[in-house]
Image (cartoon, rainbow, N blue to C red; front, side):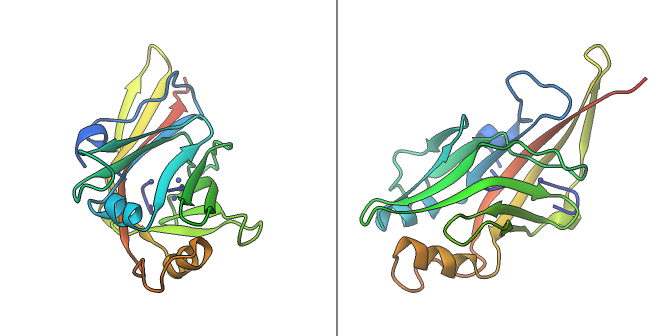
Length: 206
């Protein structure tokens, strides 16, 4: 959202811990999917030092791995039911929120959609307009391998991608810095932001 990936943003593990296992929706059904995103080490503390917090809206959950958000090795973990596939499956209603507590500025990444074919994660940022734009690029798209599991009893096929690497798309870092009122250069261009784990659920046809 991965020329064979992740289809997010929002904000996403993107791998150990939660990402080491296949993501599971609460009740997997054809057309559903789940993305787990874990930020790279240093992202949480860098944002926290600037008064910025990262979280998910819309029924998804968020957690922090590490002693605290400010710890150098802490990582945000986001669970987002917003994965898209090459056939256009998309879960709407989930947003990645980036909020600057020092000036009450906020950037929303609405309904992030992983584009497997083009190796990007697109999302609508209301502060910039109504058209979806590339938020992340998938830097290891060519190396991703799909793991397919068939549950014939449930007539459900699960296609999983692990270790999807997400970096900020060109121009996104500068956009975030401006929108959040951060000092110039606070976020470098092309920042390695997170790794992701994705599961896509499709029906098994007779």
